[in-house]
Length: 263
Image 1 (tube, rainbow, N blue to C red):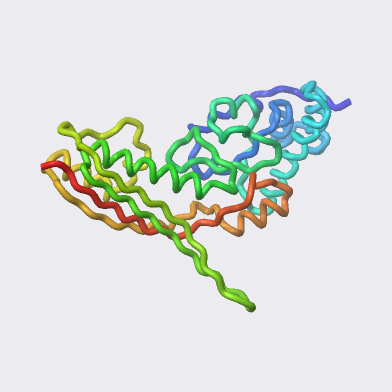
Image 2 (image 1 turned 45 degrees about the horizontal axis):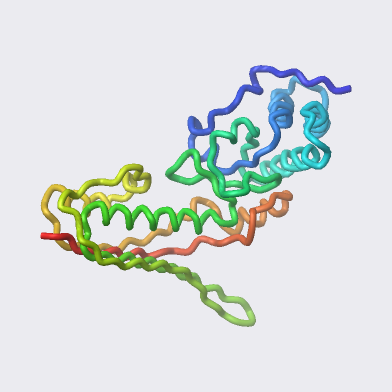
């Protein structure tokens, strides 16, 4: 029988305290498997990680298939790390403080942390879609809170691919237009997370709040994929990790935001 000793290495990790690069990619498994993995990394045992993980799963009293999946997830994460993908194995207890899409977390699924909200994680397949959508919603809410009477937010992304047989292009876009009564007391809405990192948004807000701005138009291009690209997709799949759906690649996106405020 393999003995599992709970040491200080099994203490819960507070993910929000880690740098983004260290907590960007995670998988979620049972507490016992995480404790076993961390003990194995310390080198305190003469047995392999796989043997310890199996024993830990048995000790966790998690029913059959669930225990097997937890072990398989830890093993897949280990293979991904050996291939250069920095995946953090997170326990169920540690993950309880995080926010996941409805129905998640699931075994063997690779999750990506929101770049601006430390407690939010998305399945890797939909990471770019969800971050795009979240930023879009914040941009609209910001301009409305500043008292816009007319508003248009137009975001377009395109990506061209060429192969030996054919060429094709694909793109994504979002458009929001509105006519409003406006707000005589413009303010910044609560809970802004992208705003502190967007100098152009800040300039519009300052112009409205401090200098009586009545009309604006800005255009910004976003190209950062946060390392969630086709290379990650291949390595994760090779290691046996699931992306949680059909992978949506990043597209360079041009945002055009314009609006009018009351005099």
